[in-house]
Amino acid sequence: MVGYAVARREVFQTAQQRYGRLPMPDLTVTPTILKETMPLYERVKHFIPPMEWAVYAPYVHAINRIKKERNAVILAHNYQSPDIFHCVADIVGDSLQLARDATKVDAEIIIQCGVHFMAETSKLLNPEKTVLIPDGEAGCSLSESITGADVRMLKSRFPGVPVVTYVNTSADVKAETDICCTSSNVVSIVESLESDTVLCIPDEYLALNVAKQTKKKILTWKGRCEVHERFTPEELLAYKEADPNIQIIGHPECHPDVIAVCDFSGSTAGMINYVKTERPPKVLLVTECSMASNIEAETPGVEFVKPCNLCPHMKRITLPKILTSLLDMTEEVLVDPAIADRARLAVERMIELSR
Image (cartoon, rainbow, N blue to C red):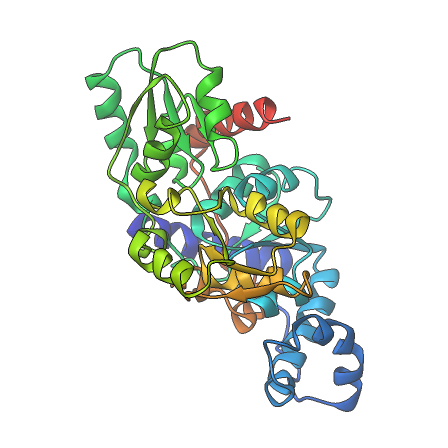
């Protein structure tokens, strides 16, 4: 992360010169602010008490005003907290959806509310735009499990074997990749390749789950998501024993033994669609905890049981940091052009194949 930090310092000056800094607004709560933000509060009132909203409201009000002044758009992943997801985000979704939608925005500035590989992907697809991440230290255990050098080593060990890389990786890794994938399209990506053997990296559990759905030989890497690897089949079976009617919906970043206990498995978008379409009376989402709260706000009548595994990296993104990012134009994400050109091809191949 040292080189990344140095790049941020250099870009900080450039971004300030290009856009200028804005003064910190008065964050005192007023009756006018409460009135103007009330429609947004209605979306999150089941998660944020009125007393706490008095703290959130000035930030929400300021962010929504200043992003228009800056001609900025806020992209938020499904794992962001409800105050961000429902109150300041312009575009929400999973990795694939954000990757696609990042190419469609007219704004000059993209604020990526997620982790750093997501911001890098937005920059790859929008090289002419300014991409900011409110906290440059918002990393990812899975992304950090592999480097571009690791991929080059795998390619030398398995010459000619195509490399399918999860989008949850750095641009350096994507640059060594034949095609990227997400949890929603990984099976179709793997099936589209002519080779009988495929390197599916870096998420070991995702690759093992893919192996159960294809006749191709899947080679894996021991990368894991620190949120999803904590779930166990014993934990989920205990929930089912307590209530046989509960529907358990799992993310394919979980161990195959966990997925075997689930009633449905899919990407975050797939999980959301399942809940909205099937409307199970009671559901347990085997994924990052905030997503359950975000869906709950949109699916009245569905009861959510929340085994609360939070992503510490996603939770580094907060309303105060988003506001600071807009005011100071920090922290800008840059990708070395020599890496960006190759990494972009892998992402664009994925998007084209997923249309």
